[in-house]
Image 1 (cartoon, rainbow, N blue to C red):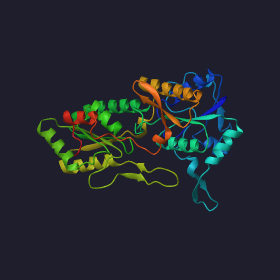
Image 2 (image 1 turned 180 degrees about the horizontal axis):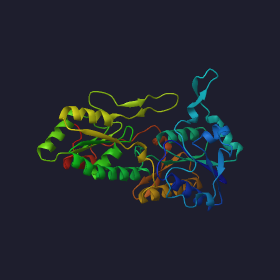
Image 3 (image 1 turned 90 degrees about the horizontal axis):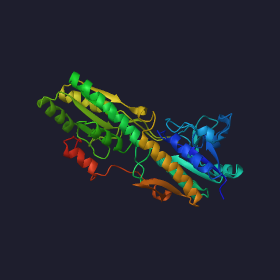
Image 4 (image 1 turned 30 degrees about the vertical axis):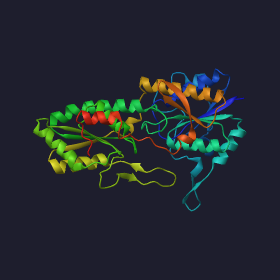
Length: 366
């Protein structure tokens, strides 16, 4: 019997997180369950000294009233609080990674929490899978603007990111054409090119560079020259942060270490400089960065998030654990976390979306 459940939102934030929280709380309280939110991923449990008001907070109907359209998460989040390898500062100032997942299980027992709904991306769902194997009752909810989670058609936050990026491309067209420039727009996505590909096609970019297709910068420069010869004296290039040339590696701002992932970035600037050198045209770069994470979710993402949150509660009510709710058009279904943890969904090279880009003449750098 379930009486008390907890919800955590870990990893990078995404528009729609508050809508998930709202759906979980309303669906659970309608069943007579109590809901609690864990602050900042699992930090509310593992670092209680940071939270004078408590690392575990009750979430009632009143707390979730009017939050469905808000970006961010009322619970906070972090991508540096993995309980399986939690960074701990030693007396000498060094940092070691410790497995503190056992403390999470003890905490759930102490607080009489019957289950966890973990909302997150690949890292958070891998943690959820590990906690499930240790005996915790867990249901996962897929979340990432990158859309790189396997076994789900889409994740909430992706549509909002693509919509914003497309709007930015629309704006870049007018200024690039006015100044006869090459404008390079760098977008997030880590090792998957979903945001770059979808926004680039929707925004009528002339070149799209994604991690799945190593690019040849000379071919991109040839595209710019051809457009000039045709009297189209400007070009828009969309580049995903994980894109890399056929000869060379990804652009990394900060390497991985102490439980954090490597930070990608800088490829847009590198592409702009290379194109300016090769074509003689003025090239500028725009980095959208965390603008893609912010703002209110689109109606599609709000509905997806609400459906996911309600389905997560239904899964617990049906006695399930170790599963993730997934969008398999037109329904929300359940898939085992072991089929999701540690797996990434890249853009298929034979996808019709990618073929559409080729058919309408968009340069992909290959």
